[in-house]
Amino acid sequence: MSEILKVRNVTKSFGGLTAVHDLSFDIRRGETVGLIGPNGAGKTTLINVLCGSLYADRGEIEMEGKIIGRMPPHKRCHLGLSRTYQIPRPFPELTALMSVVTGALCGKNRVNRGLDDAGAEATHYLEFVGLFSKRNILARDLTFFELRMLELARALATSPKLLFVDEVMAGLNPAEATKAVHLIARAKEEFGLTIFWIEHVMAVLMEAAERIIAIQFGEKIAEGTPEEISNNDRVIEAYLGSGWKKGTCN
Image (cartoon, rainbow, N blue to C red):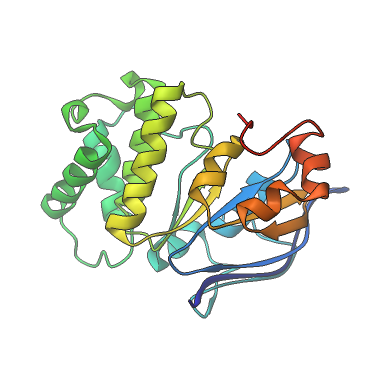
C-alpha cells in the first residue's frame, strides 16, 4: 500500500510556544488513521499546517510525490486534500445547496465546470448526508448536526482523495454521533477515500481506524494499531487516564 501523504520533521511554533515539534508519519492510501492527544496537544495546529491554513516553520509535507508545504489551501484542495472543521464554518447567507456547490466548483479537476454540473453534484452529496430536503434552507438556519453534515457534504463535493475529519463527534448526541460515524465509513467505501481522523471520543477511533497516532505537547508519543495504542503506558498516562480499560472508554 503506497503512501498518499508523508510528513517529515514538521515543527510549528507561535512565539515561544512550540505547538508541533519534529513530527513525522505517513498515511497510506485507503486507510483510516486516527490522531489522538489531550487538549492542547497540537492536533488542530497540525491539521491546519497539513491543509495550508498555517505554514510549518520547519519540515516537509509531501502528497503523492508533490511537496505541498508552501502551497495555499486551494491548491492542496485541487490535489485532492479536503477537510471538515471541529467548529463548523458555514457560509451563513448561502443555502445548503449553494454551500455544497462551492465545494463542487473548487475541488480537483474543475476546469470549465459550470453551475449546472456543480449543482447536480451538490445535490448528490446532500442526498448522501441526508440534507436534500433542506437544500433551500440558509445555512444559518440549520441545526448543529445539520451543519456537521453540511460540512461533510461540502468536503466530499471537492472529490477528495484524502479527507481530514476534525472531531466530528463534538457536540453530537449519541444517535447523531452514530449516524455521523456510519456516514464517514460509507463515504470511505463509496468514494475510495483515505481518512485522517482527529477525534476525542476514543471508542470511535478504536472501531474506525486501522492505525492511531498519539501526540502530546506536539510530539508523537506512540503509533500503532488501536489495540497497541490502548495498551501503551505513555498514551494511558497522557491521554486516557490511569483508570481506562479497553471497552470502557466513552
